[in-house]
Image 1 (cartoon, one colour):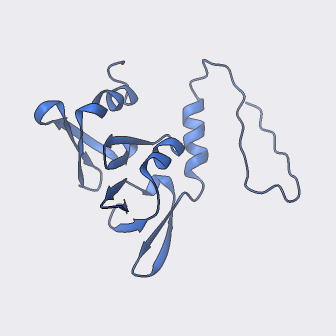
Image 2 (cartoon, rainbow, N blue to C red):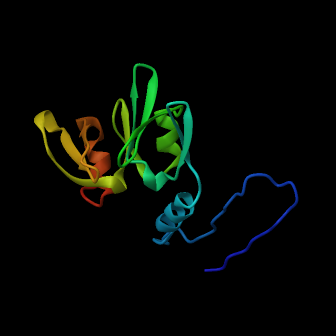
Length: 146
């Protein structure tokens, strides 16, 4: 793999472009690694602001026009829209109408009622995966193909 860095005064935010063969299976891991090394999320609690990397966030939930960011031990207010998170970060997947989850934080899941899954995360939190999103999660985790 070749790495090329071009520095330019007043360029702004760094941009990474990867040129590769269509069959290169190392690219998803490389993208995840690049994304995890940057600051990705801001959360607020008790008038204090906190900064998180994507790998520190377990899931984001939207309730009553407010979003909450869940980490291993705590919950923070955040300003993100769920579709923005799932489109920007490859490790986040929509699991129901109100939740995007970091699939790398799923410890296990089991079948629930009506084709749904009940996921338990590494921090012990449980998230319901609606049947609309079950197949996408299974495909992402290397199971059945769509």
